[in-house]
Amino acid sequence: MKVLIISGTNHKGSTYSIGRIVAEKLTSAENISEVFLPRDFDEFCCGCTNCFINNETLCPHYSKLKPITELIDATDVLILTSPVYVYHCTGQMKALLDHYGWRWMIHRPDGRMFSKQAVVVATAAGAGVKSTMKDMADSCFFWGIPKTYRLGRPVAAVDWQSVKPEIKDRISAKADNIAKKILKRQGKVPVGFKTKAFFQIMRLMQRNGWNKADMDYWKEKGWTGSKRPWK
Image (cartoon, rainbow, N blue to C red; front, side):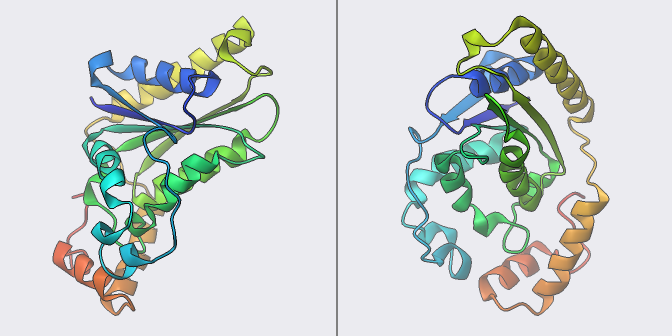
């Protein structure tokens, strides 16, 4: 099993540490890849719409984004981590996710995403973990990932070393539970009703859509007909 951790900060604090705990419960170290933001990608979307209207390769930041895209495509489990910044994910995590708008189901989702699983991790000294996890989980759903697990925790500390042992124990227990579910579903991830229903709506839209690049993509995949990415 291949696991990719995308960290919303460069430093290895509580949020990263929890993401790493989950990853190590799933696979060996050599099968874990890591991306740190903004170290590995530091660009903001400029709103040129090239990715939507024409082709994602025309994005001004395509060459810098490509290595991360390749890691995402090759992974079985994607772990997105972000500490809470003003009740939301970090700006650098949001900037990365902005660059994948063209991969949402309303545009040109990659069929491989429908067989993956994801975990979103967020920590805060206090409140905000729920809305921060939603920032990341939204993209996972609209990319087509059928199973996204959430691990959010107020840790009452500003670094992992200061987190109380009893809190770490509860985090570890939650990570164990998530890891067991992921391992059980690996290779046969069920695509739920919500994903299928949204895909169906997008399918009907793409039959007579407004964007030629998206319409051509769906027709080429056979998704406007009887084919589905999870079959």
